[in-house]
Length: 414
Image 1 (cartoon, rainbow, N blue to C red):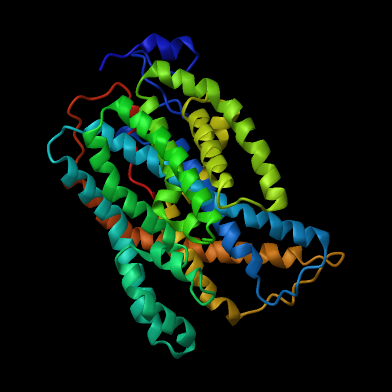
Image 2: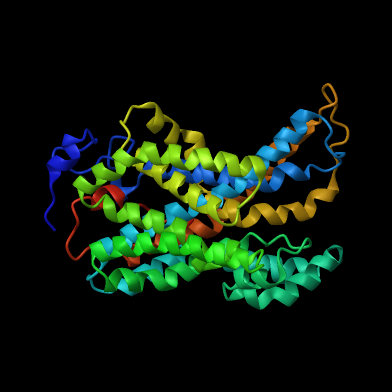
């Protein structure tokens, strides 16, 4: 592939001496890891944790103070973290697939590495949640539901189960619907990337963004409530936005184009999104597309940020990168921890001018802290040993694209 290096350098993008894009840290570390992406994953998982933990502080009476209501309303925006995860997944997976298409063992290498990253933690967690915990008598109501839905979890089809029954109040595994969406994406997208050339892939991504929105609008108009939110074809716009960016940055002149449009896209998406959130309408239709575009634009700005600029500093902050590194285990284990919420109460925490915000914040700190501890154990005892086996399945690019070394990231939660 011929590359116009001047296209990137002439637009002020950070490039090395050979014209290759330099990630937000200003250096290319071994393995092609981009620290800024860890930061974005950190933001995504923190949004999800805020969404699921904030409203459930034990021993708290219904909020009456304005600050409490604002706090709970803010937590309701945490659903956007899943859309951000989808964008990052589409970006990273598409980059890997495109760089290795045409190489030997294209499918074997990809699926073996996905297996090592995803399946050990996923199925160990399911064994714990579906086999071990249901034996405890205190989980009677949960046990009945989990045993009835077990086959949907084991086969990565839980999103289709949710589409029929909705999110049942006794389930603490409802968040697994997004893992099912991504696994379904992994089954289809490698074939599409292998079959189509780059320009046709870009067109496909564009069509997918429009088609997903049309799908959600059609389903919502016919009375479906949950299906537009959990069905893979209805949620593929975020994955497609990430894939689109991965393909565009492989031609510096086109990278300059998406960078030029990143800030206007943020404004164009954020303003109507703010209105939708204010009035809590159309969240299953237009809002998801807006968040996908917003997340994609932020991703582009992070990829092209000045190495020592404010955006790069935030995106590569140690705290965000820490949460990003362990985001997969944090996501898998966080919600089931709510099963154990009744064991203590925060009713003893004093109020401030009638506000229970201190108790809310204490609960958020405790719940996130416990989840981090579980994730660290998971990483060192389970995930890391399997990840080290990836060395037996190295990626090989048939014709190394000019930007490969800057965008081939280590496996992460996707």
